[in-house]
Length: 198
Ligand SMILES: [Zn+2]
Image 1 (cartoon, rainbow, N blue to C red):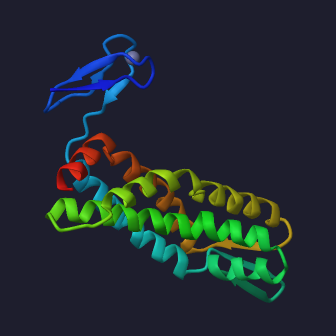
Image 2 (tube, rainbow, N blue to C red):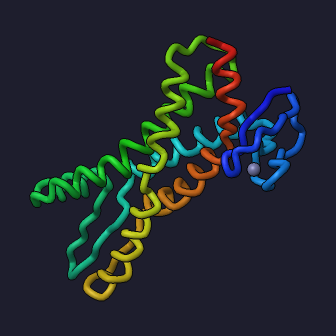
């Protein structure tokens, strides 16, 4: 039995050791602990899926523009390089950070925290990696990138034929899989297990 403060109304609630159901605050009904069976396995599987999708999304062109007899294909990384060449340094850096580096960092941190817990391997600095994971999450903006592609498809569609590539679909699924992986995490349980291993 341990005690936890409700993050909404500050009431101290007693939590059972092995909760087999979602635990609500006795006073205001806020969720204190969500029941997520096999959370480590599911988060791991989803992260591996996300990593594969991320590699596909970055290896194939996401848009092909056909105008006259001229076809131009763009990959995410070549697109960022193109922005840089056009002296849009801020935009290029922002896209690189939010669409490439942050998702990559998130996936790496997830694997670094979850793999050792799953197979009981040593992982120095796992607590730091987990804190980093929770802090960088709001900076991943793949959803906004997807929205940008959709706007481009609609706007440029009048000027040239735009063909969405495999990468666009991979990005679309990646957004969902990444969100599922993060919501499969059970932070209170992970903190507890990370603390035990120190
Ligand atoms: Zn409460």
